[in-house]
Amino acid sequence: MTYRQRLSLFIFIDSLIVLSAILLSVFLLSIDTKAFAVPLLIISLAILSCHYMFSIKYKLYKKVWEYASIQELLIILKVVSFSILTAAILQFLFIQEIHFKFITVVWLLHLFFIGGSRFVWRVYRDTVMNKSATEIRTLIIGAGSAGTMVARQMMRNKQSELLPVAFIDDDKSKLQLDIYGLPVVGGVKDIAGKVDELQIDHIIISIPSLNKKELNTIFRECAKTSAKTKILPLLEDLITGKVSINEFRDVQVEDLLGRDPVQMDMESISENITDKVILVTGAGGSIGSEISRQAASFHPRKLILLGNAENDIYAIEMDLMEKYKTSKTEIIPEIADIQDAAKMMTVMSRYKPDVVYHAAAHKHVPMMERNPEEAVRNNIIGTRNTAIAAHRNHVESFVMISTDKAVNSTSVMGASKRLAEMIVQDMNRKSRTKFTAVRFGNVLGSTGSVIPLFKKQIEKGGPVTVTHPDMVRYFMTIPEASRLVIQAGSLAEDGEIFILDMGEPVRIVDLAKNLIKLSGNSLEDIEIVYTGIRPGEKLFEELLKENEVHDNQVFPKIYAGKTTELYIEEINEIIANYQSIDTATLREQLVGLANDEIVAWEPEVAVSV
Image (tube, rainbow, N blue to C red; front, side, top):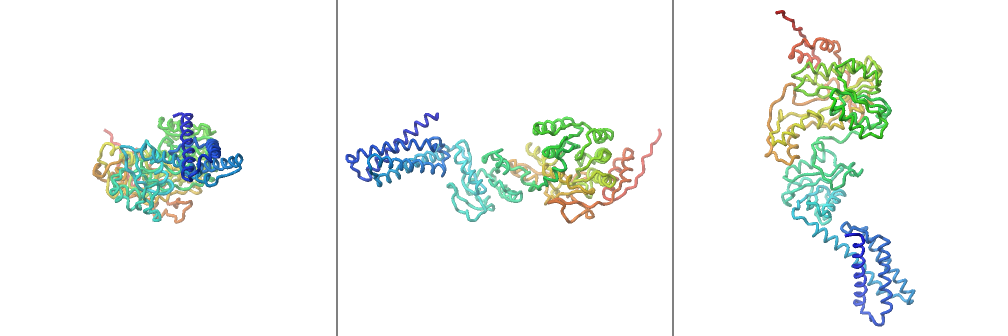
């Protein structure tokens, strides 16, 4: 229906309503129409004319009445009241008399009929036209402003298949109350029972301000049911208008395992990055690419993306070029291998970076167990090459990305990272460059992490493979890990190893169960199989040795470990001889030295044939 057609329809309906209100008032007051003919004609024409005039003035005919609210009701009150008041004044001007009783009854009936006609249409749209044959009975968690807005949107949207049935809220003052005709039936602990009782198919968690612990509690209750669980978008996305209130999304494992974000010291980070030259090694990897994105947001003068995988470097270059196309930051891709000392020296001398974030490393535990010489080449020699190049080119700050597997290492990968930390700490003693390292646990969603593997196994129908039922790990999101690295660069003073307070470790089997439930399957549908601990793995990881622990935080949720003994001569001996050491002995040497044990070895003797 066009606006002109709609306007004509409303004028016709309102004309009938006004005339009906006047005639009904005459009937109710038993007015003699013969004696009252002239005043009646004057007041009828006056009310009609004034109604049209004030309706246009207050845009009454432009309102979409299926979304009517108190605001629209107030506009109707203004239109009707001003129409009647103006008609009364005109009546007085023409016949020097005002029939107050008649005017009052007409005003009441006029208001009732005009308001009623609009809200009857809304009720009709909500209850009849919007009724779907395939309704999905929905329980809304949260009866606050967001939850009530969600319920209202569901009831209005004729395309939506979701039928709101009830609210769940822990606020006892709301229990048993009705909001938009929907009862508040209980608290979070009642979810499972109410889902069965009310035959719920869908659950919407509609509390955008939830912290991670609260969301975990709610999800555990939802997971006891067979209902599909969804959640509102992030609060910042709602505020900025990126998404609307009714764009529900699946609960992600990051929602459950990610912690509340660490607040950054923007001023100190800006001093460290803005208008500076920043170099990121391993910039095509999961961590390196996110560090590059976050560094770019502080508008450095130049951002050098260094890596040996050309497709990955090209991808992050295009991503940043698109996102920061209006920025003055010069984004420079460099294809280079940190094992190539000469190339690293060339890159450092060409760009003279102010800050280096060293994210390039081999991180796959079983792979490094089978290839310990590659861990030496990349993680140890590569770090030394990069650190020396940074020192000789007077870099202000060098931040190495390390791992919790460097603590009490049982794996080649963890040991090689611990020895790389020693190299960085030793360089800090010799150089004006501030060298530091940052340790953190497993990163959610990174290349090679357990979550993408579990997702692939679930998509194939299982089984999901877990090494041991008691295996636990610390987890953090890629953005949080990258924020910590950026923040640590601004805090570095004297060769510290920074560690994030990562909260409670997570059982891998619980992670697998959550992913199965989040995928819409039950634990009966997807089997979990235990395969045994792989070489180099341990049941739990630590972030600090006992002799490294500092009690005080240097920044909210960030600790600094104490410097311990560095075995630089022994590391240099390994670097000089690793190619002539057999795999088993090399592994023993690396793990031993990382744990303060010097393992004696004999070089292999070549035998002439």
